Length: 79
Image (tube, rainbow, N blue to C red; front, side, top):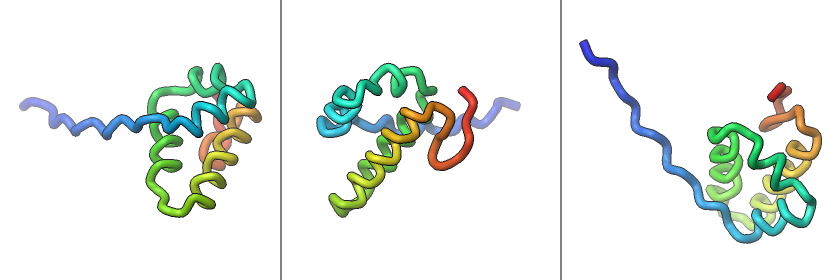
């Protein structure tokens, strides 16, 4: 019996304001070092919201977590 393959989730595009924020805080290397699923999850989390205020709050949390290095979506992470 063949294994059932799940469709891959859509790969999220990085908005310019996210790229600019990563570069401004020097966090691009920390972002690039994260596993692909985490990078995609962060972008989905930022891209899916409708309110600009929420979008920027999610971005701020992502930047803070990348800076801390041991947090992913509010949870401890050892990468």
